[in-house]
Image (cartoon, rainbow, N blue to C red):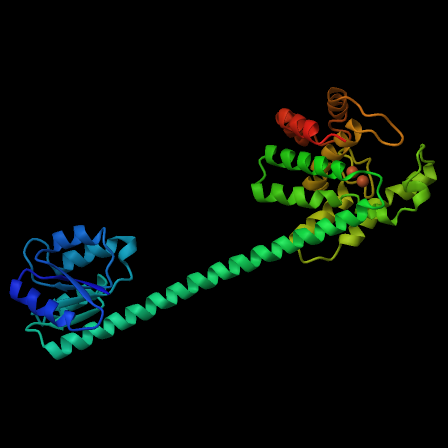
Length: 343
Ligand SMILES: [Fe+2]
Ligand SMILES: [Fe+2]
């Protein structure tokens, strides 16, 4: 451990450093002036400072005040040595952050015991601080693992749904990446945009509850069949409901709201405008855009530009104009995703 000793009297300095060096594992650095000490201490960490009160130019109190101003030096113990019995000086020193006092002339036994106790207390304080830093990093790591598992659970659920859904994994990759781009373009925090990216592939998980003759029908659905098909939004929400996980809660919200229309003519609840969760309004744009630009059993793929025109025709009716504008603002990124993940 390193101790800085500051005293303008050379004999005091050598006595104190001699006593300190008698302790185990201790190194002493001595300074004849507090200004020189302050400069050195700004660059070099120590475990204890012993400072004389009566010194020319900057006395012990002045030193204390400047030293404690440095946010890195608030915990380091300081023992002030004073020949004055004046209580005022001691009170002021305490206010400025002194840890303990010693009086001159120095009593070697008392001096050694005080220094040793102060060092022990500081060691214990540092060990505790290290331990809480270690604990904090352990908690952070455990939380990260939990989040990772949550993502895995979502992925597995998504894969399960994929086995019944004629829509491909590529659709899910593209629509979730489009959703993420729209969310970022809207100015949502990165964390929220990432959550939308991870949760949105589950938007159609409710299709597992739709009978095959409807889900896999190559032709146009009859009105009755379409009514059953529409049930996938509520089925998905039922599957994902009741979770403590914010990610699953978001997935549930998206499953329920991705077929709502901005003008209130969508399903299942006919929500209008801002009553539709933002996540649902974002995913609606991404999902429809990808459906249009890919081949489905009942239709050919539209060109990128035709699909974008169609989205714009639906601004204010099907789609939230703000989400569409956000989509338009990152159109070249959307195009990159469209190119990179073609079927
Ligand atoms: Fe859907
Ligand atoms: Fe979809």
